[in-house]
Amino acid sequence: MGVNSAIFFDYTAHVNFFTLCLQSLPEDAAMEDNSKLMLLFLSLSGLELLKGLDHWPQSRKDKIIDWVYSHQIPRRVDSKGMSNKDALGFRGANNLGCRVLGENNVVWDTAHLAMTYCALLILLILGDDLSKIDRKGLLQALGNLQREDGSFGSSSEERNDITFSFKEGDMRFVYCAVVIAHILNGYSYIDIQLLCDFIKNSLSYEGSFGQGPLQEGHGGSTFCALASLHILDKLDEVLSENDKELIVRWCLFRQQSGFQGRPNKEEDTCYSFWIGCSLKILKSFKWIDKEKNKVWLSRTQRKFGGFAKYAEGNCREDLGHSYFGICALALMKESELHGLHPALNISKRATQRLKQRMLTTHAD
Image (cartoon, rainbow, N blue to C red; front, side, top):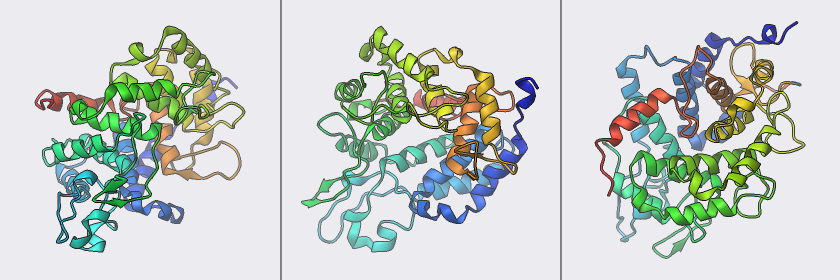
């Protein structure tokens, strides 16, 4: 049996899977209830790549757009004089924040950087013009999330003499911050040089990026670092040719049939995206074995749609790996799919809308 005869992707089943995820999720997804915007992004962006949104009526898109905007945190000052100006952006779900705690608890209604990232991409995918975004307030809050080492926290840590314990911050949020600043044409609100220094200092001896300096190199953080530099047009400024060659070598060595995220780990569906996009950004994607990767991905897809993390065992499909499986196929230019922008992680069609919008949005 030849390699090609082992490859089959049931795109109709995958469209049905993402459509179902918009309506109902399995019980084990309950732990993600406070990240509904992320779940919505994965479902909608998957459908967009599968051309499943092509025939949606605008009224259906508008309903979702309105729901997304309901997660945007408005500027408030409560009766105690407490302001939320450093916490603007999008919360992950409407069971969080002032809707639950009341209007006199605005200090606890805090945006999350990853949810803001998801919200903006959803709005672009659905064709919204972003006119309802509190652009200046959101960008000012974004700038306040940048730390002394150039990285970004996920949420506001301190305001009005109340210190929070939100210490999460690494390369993932650097990437989210760069995408947000790019979409809103707001690079002046962040220290780009400091950010680039953080990325450079996170490059490991073996040719991959960790979540921060002196941390283990990983396929996901390598994508976040490279995609951030690509969007900022800083790849050649920050990385030497030797750096790039070392990163390409590390990435290519991650392919077995599919891709692993680190040395001596199992192949995992999502790394066909994380590593694949990293190589695409470095113009070295041509060196992967696409046929072997497609065969492996065909083994992780499930009968009724979606992709699982692993090919073997009783591993079931999940929304995250299903999305990244579709992204990997789009990266390999499967004819049934819209093309994928390797750095922004949405369809090239959606990025065209962004380019049109940026022409009319002036930087500060």
